[in-house]
Length: 258
Length: 69
Image (cartoon, each protein chain N blue to C red):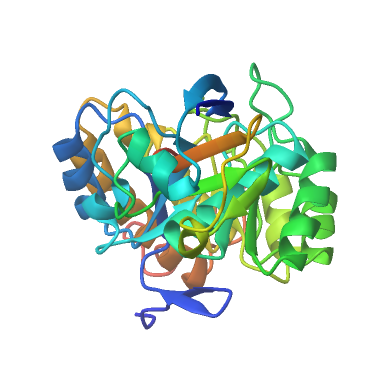
């Protein structure tokens, strides 16, 4: 049995390797119960304009004392908007951590790699710990690290698609080369996808829709917790090499009738 | 005297002369956790809300954390 191992980003240690989103739950209580069941310590939030008509309960009051809140720049399509959103998030949440999202368009929600590097560089210079959500491109991940990102968050597949990890070979390459933690983000559909991310060697996995939109978010959150633990254990234990032909696991000698 | 500014993208006539007064005028509790303000693309820190003026034509963003992934 291997010892429990913590996970570290930018000098902060976490026991759980599961980062959870807070969007799309059927209601607030289900979200709270699912977050609890997931064992997560870090929960992402978006930064949005206050509605001048209605004033809903603050995420800070709701979960801010229990979890580390990681603001994202979800939906931003320009460097300017993403940087301003990050700066507003720093003021709103008193954190210099940001999950940097800069999408190329609203149909694919795919990260815009070119703008992403520019925004990451600006934010790093302004003192942020930048965790960019990016495509599963080892070179882009390298560029993001070159400009000072604290982690990289390559996608498994498009946001909310539930397609799992479409290119495990790319993710493996990113993990093998990366000098910062790799958090597989987006596309997780079910528990085995999360386990696979950790088996490949990702340091953590970030997911939202797979839990919040499942039929039973609390049970799925519990499944994700176990999947992440199982994937990590399997990674540390080391999988056997794949081979094309059978290899008996019982002794060949002493068979009756031989 | 009222001035015309933009708050969260919408044109709004305001009497407030400071950010703090603007928040009060818009019914936003300034002590609520998580509220952040930007004027013309630059963040105005909470400690500066009392002194920061609201000028005619200002483009003001008032945000807070919401659910999201």
